[in-house]
Length: 134
Image (cartoon, rainbow, N blue to C red; front, top):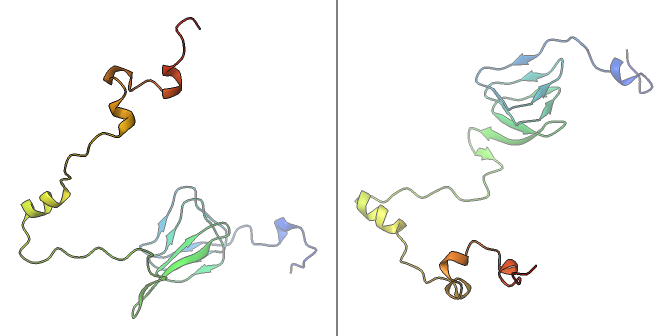
């Protein structure tokens, strides 16, 4: 039995089995402490420290790891992404029309680039005005 006055090293089990569910992913440098149980299809972020139990279909991150997203069959991912999902391409739009959308008209060069000779553009602006005798 452990108490609040017990040494830290004796508070958690040192050799308890770890259970990682099917389809789970562990990020680089993630640490799963003894006795942890990860559900099915769990994603553990890189560098996370997992202890305790993680439910199915969850994404955990941090040290200690906390649930940051979770899949719900009725509501989908919770919380939802901050940006809206991309819109599907409308029926009848051709490949060429999509490519034409990505072509931007030529833009004029900014005024500061027009005033500087092409061979001096790689030189920082503060270095251009330095006298040669320095």
